[in-house]
Image 1 (cartoon, rainbow, N blue to C red):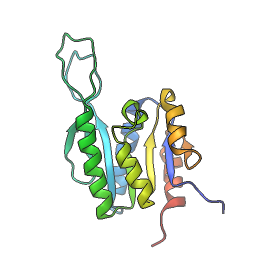
Image 2 (tube, rainbow, N blue to C red; image 1 turned 180 degrees about the vertical axis):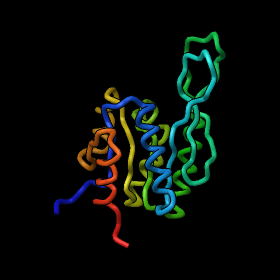
Image 3 (cartoon, rainbow, N blue to C red; image 1 turned 180 degrees about the horizontal axis):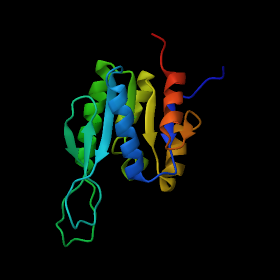
Length: 172
């Protein structure tokens, strides 16, 4: 059998679809795996231009804000890089405690610039732990510069992701 890359990136799907898929998969895996990472959640505020909300830890359930609420009349969106860095620190600590799989909501604007969850990605790669993430089309060049050729691109399909996990999961 050919070697399978330990990093899987979901592409070509809306962010909400990917986060719902990741949430469903991690809920299923939670009983049999030690998970580390964060998933994006909506902020639930009405009439906001900014869709960024929170990152929720898969290990502790803690929520980290990733937006600055500029109010309902604002047309701007401001990511809170500090909240995302705090989430990345928590994920790095979870990886250091031991995990089977790291799921990171996405590699986006902050990560492309070297910030955001980039430290969590680095920690997972250094630990040799499989990583599941997503990346939008606009950030593919930065993703490829960061991770190529050590990743496999997957569609937003639970069966394909489950097959990837079965292929990279360490033997008991």
